[in-house]
Image (cartoon, rainbow over all chains, first blue to last red; front, side, top):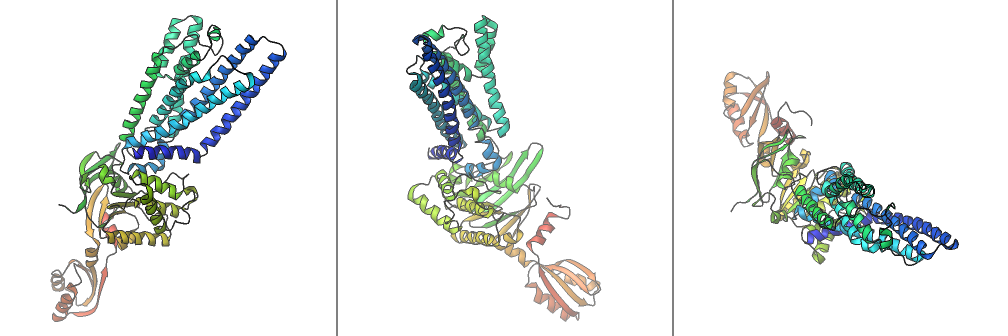
Length: 277
Length: 306
């Protein structure tokens, strides 16, 4: 257990030392400033024009969901890129030889790194989601959308992607791993949109293609389920708006994604354990 | 009870179609400073990696510190400095040693005390709280050496430990190896620098194309002497008589014979025999073989630079 904690501690510490945390904070702040400025002007213009409160509430809710969509996208990139070289980079540079020759299991290295990255990713996603909620609240007051209700599903989505990126690093070079992990998310993304468009157009075949794609790569389904759950009834009935949900993934998808994450982590441990260093 | 800390029988490793190690059979005794020699690509580093379980062998068997290869308890008593040593270079030397100490299961005051002692020993105490990224190659190598000794190991693998070190750094490594010998620690030294090996090792093994082709004790090797005799007259009878004292007898010119004797204790008897049979002796020049000459001879004329 001490070796797992030592690996996790080093992972978090290195994230700070390599200025990843600083870069993440600066970029997240920039995002929140742009987002806040945008909704400030929308909110002010609507108030000046005397738009009814209910309508302004709907506009703010839609903007909040759009903001959350951006948070989700930034988090996806963060979850994929943060651990992309954690194993492959250390194997290539030879750092891993000194670590793996110690009296520890290879599994301890993978699990320790997983744990460390999970802490950082969780902090990043939570900080962005809380930041978004705070900005909306400060500028527009209470809105019907509850971004934090989607947080557990977004976290699971990011952990799945992060685990996939770590697992890829046991066999692939850093660049190949990054391309593969983003490609994996690409399948989820396009599958999600196919399912949505199928929902809008009433095409069962398109919906089925989307569902199969979500089973192969579940991250986007988690986001869609989360974004459905946070929406007020009024928006759910809004139908064809861009960021609303026309085809809601089943809650069973959460279990599928959790199992997928665990299976990927087990694969990563086995793959790294048999890897020649 | 065996005093062997490393035993291998026919270890083999393929990387795709390439046979990196063909048949590694070795025995290293406790407390020995063992040199592992061979040209580039001979399979030395792969052999060390198999002994440390970083690479899984495709055939053969091995035991390290009495346990099968990869045993975790045994690895807790091993120190390792890899070739082209690299670290998490965003950390300071002290932080790095702390991290590696934790992987050995060390912690608290005991770990901090070991870190201070080793940093002082490798002359890095002043730079200990600087980020390793700014270190010179020699400083990196010395950090690696400290890392390899954190657990007071019973067996240390040093893969090209003097790589990147200046003469003073090399002297430091030589002193540390001598200290390890005094402490009874076994050292497995992988090096191209034959002078270093000659100065530090008790025994060496030569590896070629993944096979151990020759082993010898360095002290004994020095006893084998090449001899140049300037004598007259040289005839068939003289050459036959010399063969009872040594081997590899060749006449290189009208008055010079070259031969090899097993020990310098042969020399008085040989001189007496020459004088008694009436041969005029103008010169008798013994010449010990350097490890480099042994290396060239053992590897064969066909060996090309790697």
